[in-house]
Length: 383
Ligand code: FAD
View 1 (tube, protein in one colour):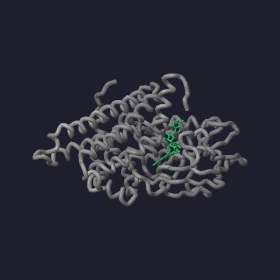
View 2 (view 1 turned 90 degrees about the horizontal axis):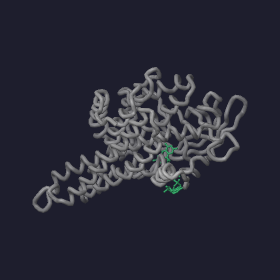
View 3 (view 1 turned 135 degrees about the horizontal axis):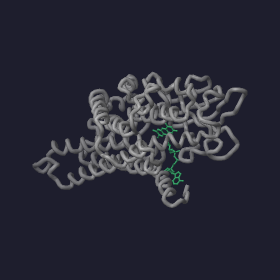
View 4 (view 1 turned 90 degrees about the vertical axis):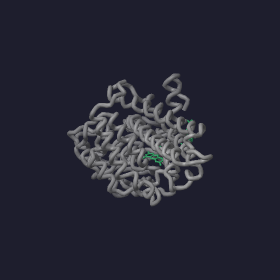
């Protein structure tokens, strides 16, 4: 793998870095406090081309590569994971699924809107009774003439109350497990679809996370994406790439932790010298730095594999598993460098730790990724 970034990749990273330092970092603590990111950020992400970064130009995207996508995602994660998540879901899980699986009509209808930020997407897989074991979801869609009628509940849906469209997974066949699952693009203003925002999250407080209830939601067959019974493949292919985006966001958290820890260690004095002079503080900092480098290289490897058309699912699990655990460790180590000041919200490291914590839970918990990596190495499913 060539670790030298191209001119375009350097330029897009600079653009993202300047945007994050100017428009995100100064507001992140306040958005966390009031539990809402300023919604105008979505349009800004669209105007910069970030929401359509890897979508073909003919559908309003930029046609960029996945390494560029990682660079932008990392910068957003450095600034505010709540903002990073908006992009990771709307572009990474929804728009990319439409580009990969959608009909020409679906692509022409949704992609330009999602790329510009005029519309936001959300991904409706998890349910109250099925999280890790998503293949056994209970939401049902039954055929009624040319329409489908959908009933069920989706839980923990990122962008849920903001979204204009939900990429929704429902059971359409009698087959157990993944075989009977079909995917739909359901406009969120469809009658029978109600949304409730979930408050009181430990982190990602600025992000709209919601429960979606579908009660007799009627959509035409034109809302079905991919053939009947292929919905689980849509979900899994979205998540395999989506995990790279989570991993890149985690690199951003770890980098923010490193930047904050180094700066503070150079200012804070104890025992007559800055704490940067104490070897055990240097150990905390170097542990963070190693985690940043390792997580970044694992994440870039996934991007490189995707861009070169190589298999990437296991690499994506490895990167997501490592980077999410690394982000938690890095934020915790940075908090230790800050001492008691790390524990109050005047400083940014407490928020980094709260935001990092969910990364080991969503898009596959750490345990689930260990099982995925274990299965790919041994050929034995231990689920
Ligand atoms: P469970 O599956 O009940 O797991 C509980 C524990 O059991 C975990 O430790 C898990 O690792 C362990 N476990 C389960 N099965 C096994 C096994 N076979 N072997 C070993 N250990 C096991 N979902 C969406 O569809 N769309 C979204 O946009 C979305 N956004 C989210 C945003 C937030 C803030 C959160 C918190 C969640 C979000 N999720 C979303 C849901 C998320 O993906 C699930 O929470 C996750 O998959 C875990 O499911 P669960 O919470 O039901 O936990």
